[in-house]
Length: 56
Image 1 (cartoon, one colour):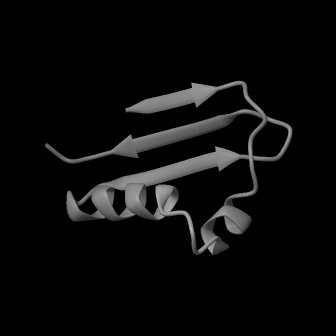
Image 2: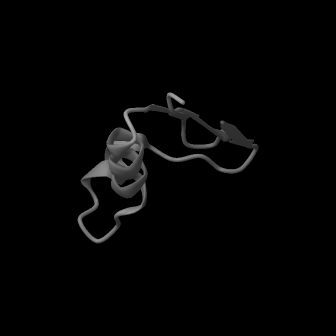
Image 3: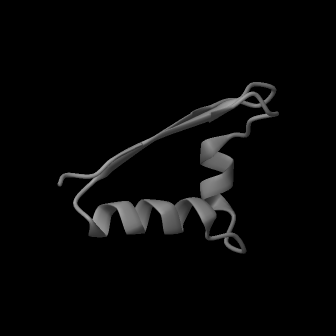
């Protein structure tokens, strides 16, 4: 599955350091539990692309 937007983007490392937010951590955990892989490509001022691959 691939999701993409042309929004404002964000700094992935900075977002991962936020202790009050579980969005990215939750996505990564759920994908890992299913034996899959997740790739997040984004930068501040650019859009975001999230790719998830889960074996069937």
